[in-house]
Image (cartoon, rainbow, N blue to C red; front, side, top):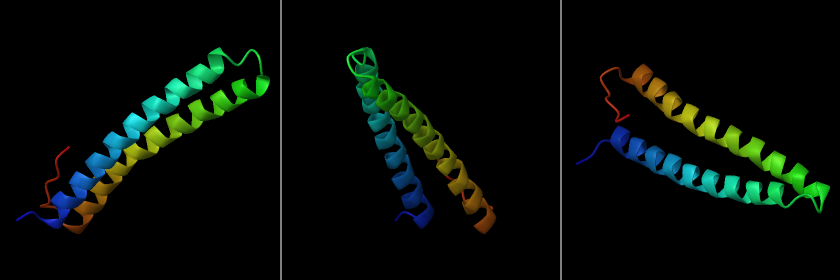
Length: 83
């Protein structure tokens, strides 16, 4: 039987994996908009926003893993989560 901490850790690892996949797809889409944005300046602005938001989302996802580990250690210092 698995503990609650292991289940939460597994959910977070899955979520980070899905976020990285989505981020790669968004970067490819933004690159496409940026490369072919010479026709329309709005596409270049949109691509820059997508790049920025993707970078912020990846940063938040990586910080979330550390935040969960911090909270878990504050609650119970003996909890061992997979990194």
